[in-house]
Image (cartoon, rainbow, N blue to C red; front, side, top):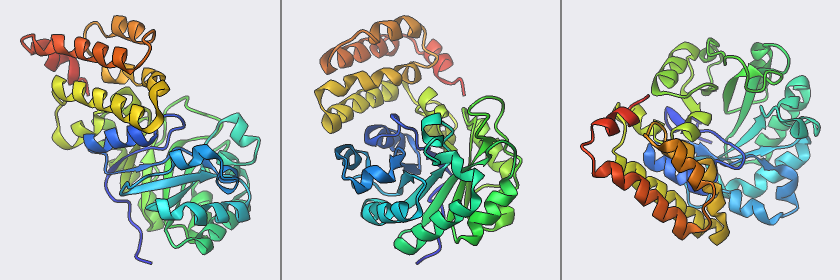
Length: 317
């Protein structure tokens, strides 16, 4: 197998209910160089749960399938089963949500490093594709050295590190000062990457190969465009990408999926005057026709203005 390397320096993180096929496509068009599927249960893969097929990448380059679970054999079988739809397989050992922890999965694996090692070894033996792992710096305290040493000894191909402990959830500041290059494997950093400057600083301080953007992409989907172009996109570009997002959802998930756009409206209208009132109205809209009309109406009024306050509104990086 060719030596693994993350296929770029900035990516869309795996986020449950957010990093679906439609949003992955949108973020790629904005400039994200790679992405992850939403977190998928190994149990669901093995049981052939209908929703799993919709969550997997479909003809997408540089997209990992992220699995979670606690049993080495089941995770290995699940990884083998979905690898044909993945650029590589990613194991979630970072999720701090209680219902995942109770199953001894996600970040709970950081409390049992021998089990984590067994899981990675089993997945590696079962897969022809590379296997990476998403971790936090520890469960209750910073134990990143023990965690990284364990993963390297298991033969992991790469590690994505969220700079908080599991008990911190998403509170406090994420740590970036981790000197990740000392393990001599591909690494990526995540946590508190909300602006281009955040991504640049995190890469510099952590010495990671790539930055994985999560809530920063939800807050402002064009962060990837800003990273590579050093400026905000035009209002027309933002409008058209929002409309494309709506159309992709309709195509992939059907007429009733319009409600999923509600969690993205704050991001697409980030910094625009009148955004709060628009968001309130948007939350009450029913159906894609109403959604698309409202999007056009909102953004078109900026296109007819002089453009001065547009630039001010959209360059808050």
